[in-house]
Length: 624
Image (cartoon, rainbow, N blue to C red; front, side):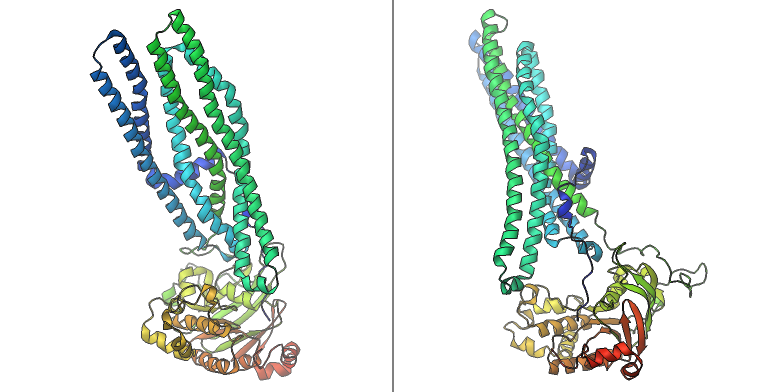
């Protein structure tokens, strides 16, 4: 009988991403947080780009001087040399600046990924229940990549483009105000396209990014249960679900590309129309003697140079709207609640009729880890009137659970499915927090202990005995990376894994495959038990730890558990009669309450529910 899954919300962050957005001010604030460490290089790259643009602005003037000298038959060497220097200097400075900005952008992406990964691995279990792992992975991969665009190609390019545009307009105004007015008028006529396109680009990109997250979530779900998918003949159905998310991402991307293309075309059209108009009006002004040919040529060169900052500005604004959706998704992920590793959790409601800390005199400090019990000694575990529900509005899972597990020995938790047995382990690990009541470890509230210290004292073997991708050695040492070979060998013998190790081609260094697919269910279970024993915990939590073992290995492992129980406090969720009968005490749970406590012999005759569980073999004496 498996414990029910926590009633998590089916709505993932991706589901709300399309509607999630940040104000312009909030977007810039988030960006500032990400670029704070590299802002010096960012500014230097922008300055180099501006210096390159300034060198380019001098080229039309040098060309004008060259034409004037040709007309007056003066020496051309100095002017040609100046023009050459300006061309090479402008190209060199801009190339240097672009490389520095690209390098800085990659650093921003790396920093964002490191920060986000560190946060995701510290997520509260309750937050993870409400999220889709595939969507969270999309935020680390595709969403962070868009930071590259918004930090350099958007913000920096927009800034340098505006300054470059201002410089070109000033130089054009110095040459001829009338031609400048003509150029600005044509540009204003086309600007309506940009204003129309921007909000559509933002909406289409948000939809596309949300679909990418949905696609990752659906694909992760299918790959995580691929054998079930195949056995159910559901490949085509699951493929269709993923394809729908792919198609939605495609539609959003195409829509954004359409409007971006329209914006880009409008930039080229602006310059082309301006060129034709300036050529017509400027030719008339040359004919009338208002300006000379050299001035017209210089103005036309400036007009061509105007295309670059205009194109960059339009592209930067479009990319900003594209990337702003990703920034909103990153901010959403950064707001997910994480475990408080360095501070106690906020005080919760005390157990009914009990003071918050009955054994602590007024003014006495919270007990430190060092004064509870020496490391390695069995710990006392007490549940005091614990009430718990997964979320407000949902029914209580526990309704005043109250029992104690003495140091050393085994305490078995039994009861029908849904009684809340496994959830007690998750509360002790502080994956969730009780609504009221207390959980004590050696008389100290677990909320008063740093999480790292609390979990270091616990060894938790989950019901499905997860094995990670990597080698067998990696998995065994996962919770105790400093364990020596002698200790490892001892645990291998105790958990009957030596035969498995000898049969593997590379022994302990053999890869076990994704989620331990190359191991049998019983082998994965023994690996999980060995991993927990290597941790040398003060409290060992076993959730159906022998459910996939054959009779011989189960018997051997029961002996190991009995041996461990002499030096460690063991709490076990058990459904097999063979496991339950060896417990020193049995706690019978029903509907979130403790129904009875006693030994097997006592409960068989005194508690109706326990007697029925044993008689109907809901507690089985043989492996399935």
